[in-house]
Image (cartoon, rainbow, N blue to C red):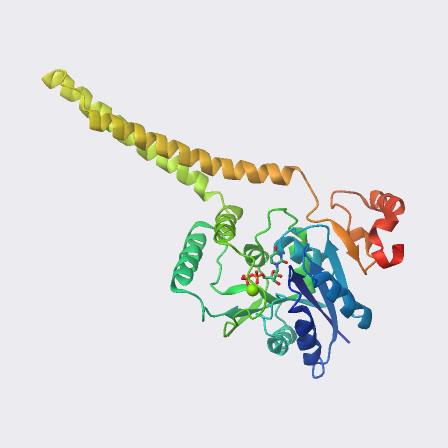
Amino acid sequence: MKKITFILPAFNEEENIEKLYDSIVGEFNTIDYIYEILLVNDGSSDGTLEKIREIAIHDKQVKYVSFSRNFGKEAAIYAGLQNSTGDAVILMDSDLQHPASLVKEMINGYEQGYHQVVACRNRKGESKLHRLLTGAFYRSVNKLSEVQLENGAGDFRLLSRKAVDSLLQLSENNRFSKGLYEWIGLSKKTFSYENVERQYGESKWSFSDLFSYALDGVLSFNTKPLRLCLYMGVFILFCGLMYIATTFVGIIAEGIKVPGYFTTISAVLLLGGVQLLSLGIIGEYIGRIYNEAKHRPHYIVEESNMVSPSKFVPRVVSSKDVEEIFRKNAFAYSTKEDQR
Ligand code: UDP
Ligand code: MG
């Protein structure tokens, strides 16, 4: 029988974990697949880990990985993908905003041979300002980058094993999953569902998080903003040369007049602004190169009920190194229960 792995990133979701688990297991009464539930505790400070441990004790199909601190949802998804063993995986939020009742439809798509089956939400219940900003975000990313994103299509999706393995080949640290799903391509089926509002706990996204996420979206998939700096530079240089030429002709024809304060100050401000903007854009790219160059692991695991050592070591090591590291640190990968 085929296996579906559910990847559930959780950061302070103690009120939701059990309900989520029940809703997934409930669906499998009528689905002819085995499930594996892989919970990734992303450094929660509430009782999320305790809830996860309780569920894992009673159900051997439940696996978990608990991070040493909050590494972010993208790292949690990456850990889930690395440790999944199913023929297909379903990525789902742990806050009950992704209804388990849609799992059947996803599996139907998988059986039809699609590598990605995406549940796309509408924007019901969101404020007008939020909708306006998200609309602008999608338009600008799609205009600027090589991947085309669909408004509302997020992480709630089924991925075939081939899609998971393809995503794992993209091992960059600064992950913008929405773009990565599009980048790998593969056949895709999309269906829509009514947005569900969060009932317990609160969203972890502040306005500044959303802003830096949007910036990631624009910068992760293209170098067009750098080219924009070049175009701006060329345009301003052209205007400057024109100004110099006309002023010079004026001086030759009419002699030197009192120099205009306004033109000088506008030129200085304009050039200063464009230079700072360009430097800022270049800086953003350099920052990303710096982060990638460090080759840090995406996350550190503090506790897990899986013994899957090769998945927990940094990716830039040979298989011989893997064995050696595991031999030396075998205790680090066992669960806390085992260590007692
Ligand atoms: N999440 C996570 N790490 C984080 C932030 C969020 O694992 O640093 C998880 C969170 O527990 C939830 C999912 O990612 O399962 C979506 O988070 P949230 O509901 O805050 O985002 P929203 O639905 O508002 O986009
Ligand atoms: Mg949510």
